[in-house]
Length: 608
Image 1 (cartoon, rainbow, N blue to C red):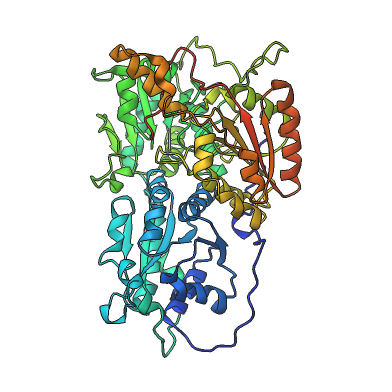
Image 2 (spheres, rainbow, N blue to C red; image 1 turned 135 degrees about the horizontal axis):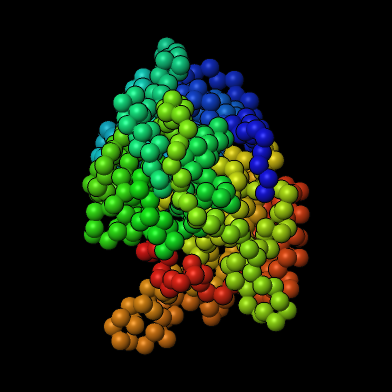
């Protein structure tokens, strides 16, 4: 997949599937109108939602005050899909999209998707509502069960901020503050709960829209000159420098600077499949295939390094423990991260506490830019970095010999690489069985990483949100999901079809929650029990699920099941033609259970 010359105009793609309302000549202003006008002022083109009576006022304002345009409503069949779509948008753009969920029950449905965005450190503006806070205004039964004293507490431990503004003027400030907070690193979701009575209060006189330029997010957090000088000297003198590239942006200029830094130092680089693309994996300095963990080869490189620069590596303590166990690292460890500001205590997603030699509170992009300037002042390096090391071999295709009868995940990846050759592709979501040696990455939009929270069900919605952001950019959206992940989020397909969001879904279907099968196998062996029982309570057979029919039932094109290698490439080509014509295609591929890094037989992750 070739590299683009310039960034796509992602934020300006025109909405499709627009449901145009009958024009309204009403001149009144209501509390929900103020919220809607503020949402428009943010210049975010879409808001994903599943309808709910608690925000009927806001819904009316978006339709009859704004004409369902900027933001355009995207109807979703489940609240988790609505939030996941907004999450996927942010994974491509780095900017927040909006979502709205119904009071109490809708927010409860959405919580897994909110947690995913939180763990993925993605900006998201989530709006909700509650029944009348004033008990005298509540209707019998329904307003009572859909009202809570502190609805934000449902998501407070995995959002950056929440608020329940009680007046239209307070709504303005709340939205301005939320936008600032979610776009300040470390990024994440914020939740604003709108009282239904406030939404339906008449506003007279109308409130002017504040000047948003005066409430912009802060500039990126930069390292100080002393820190830059100290780190530059350490790296300049290193014989075997290593860069751990973790959470970074999709900006192509920042990508080029990361490549330039590695080349300037002769430093090896390790990347992480849990997050988006950070470095070209077929570059000679990419040290080992990326995975969901650092792996054996990566651990050896980490042990051999003498200076390690960690750029928002998601689990630095875990990587160091994999390489060194309980021993103190022999290398100098430099940690560059702002994630400390997200620590709360309810969730342990802050990972282990790494011991480091230098901890710099800065974002990766300004740190890399500053290091390039500081290294220029130090002149040429005299040390030979990683002398005698042979680069990792490039990506190789698995065997497609006629005698092979079983399709594996590597076969799926190889077939996709072949039919997509020459196209610009964004792999929006990988299955748990994916591995770094399966897919070329040469651009920040080639790969968007995993779902964030380590669960399943977010893949379809996140992929559709990413595809929405990519629509019109010339880059094809590809999602490779496991069958369990797809089935939990399958109703997101309808939204993609309805709003004409082209995307190719390839489902690696092994009829099981296979990661958990591995856990049961390992535990049975450890306890001296029959590992043959590992499938009980895991397999989705008897009857088999008909995934293509589930896709066709929502208006998408369904293909398969593909059970023979000989049929794989042709079926994928047929599905690709649908997507290139602007459609949504789902391909069910029956794969052998599991694919692990060579030399390992451990579960890929602890999940559901």
